[in-house]
Length: 581
Image (cartoon, rainbow, N blue to C red; front, side):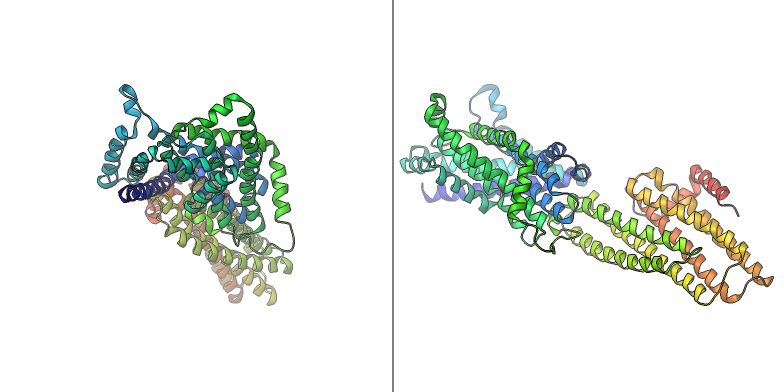
């Protein structure tokens, strides 16, 4: 093998790896909201988890990325260790799809078979891809163009590698090298080492498929190498769990255990069959090609699943044995930065954390409303503690979403991240107003001030309306539907009107001597805080409506809704009657 062939092999390998990386990242961006939907349902039963892990891996063409996501989900607490097992197993099988795509490089023959050769269709895909990527404005079509370009570069790299090693078909030294790999230990170590270095079993299998076109790699050599490649792909997840919580480390160990145990069981069976069954003895001596390697790769994974899927609970027990529960787990985190490399996964996790923040903030506000009528020092302490927790949520989410925005998001994911940054500010302010109302209540109690009976009845109507708008806001955030969000703005307008009416009635009571100026200051502060809570609810619901319409111009959307929407007027009348005073 001369210097020109070596350079061609290196160049082909570089193109191959770059194409695979480009295709995988572009597939991930193009999947967008669909991938978020899949990831949001990852926490089902083992069978459902298996299907979801399979789908995600096929979509993004990387089992390593899927398992790193699983480690991040487990470390964040969004997925339990038991739930992760099915997803990991699905990811293992999903990784075999890449080898089937690459097996087309081994197609030979004339006639109709010509159209399936990469040399026939790859240039056409590259042409379509470059047109979409360079000359079309739509970001979705640009992503599709990047997918086609990535696949084309990958296949060109595959052909370059195959062409550079074609001369080795007559090289006795090359044949002797792969005869050595038929030794199970050497073969497994070779597959493991190459895959660990490039951190992609798909790429590693692709290299083996390119080399197989020399006709010098037999099944006896390929089987242990492929088993080693499946172990080597676990290196990415093992590296990602460094510094993670105990359950995240256990998830990575389950991934490793699955492939190690499968190799320990299946490799001896292969050699027993090879030495005792004539059909397997003949198969071992058969020269491989890309298609045979894809078949071996897939059959190994399917048999491993048949053996180990029923034993998924034992894998969990083994993980607990290797990572025992000793002391406090200080490495579990709220938002795992491992997920940032897969933006849809990071957005799913962010939405879950914002949901927790929203429930805490709205719950705190409702407690404050209750204290207006029945002050409780213990509950007051809870409200202050919860406001501090909400502040921590905002700080963590703000930093996380800013980092996520720097990851080169798709247009849809970028809008989603921007929306979340808006929402956390409004939820945090609602929590602040709960403390403001609490302070007004405490001031009234300390100074022995009290509202008149008429004032209390009026305030009860306003607080009931605020309580309902809080419920509607939480429902609109969690459901992300226009129907839920559209109910918030009419009620917010009613609350604005109530505030003005209550302010006017207070002035009347002052003029009649039924109330004092000192009580009036507290009354005014409470009305202002309640009205601003409704404003923040309006912002949240308006943001949800804007996202549904691919528009982030909040004030324009709300103005249009008030002026032209007949349903707004109908809902406004309904709430105005419900909260009439």
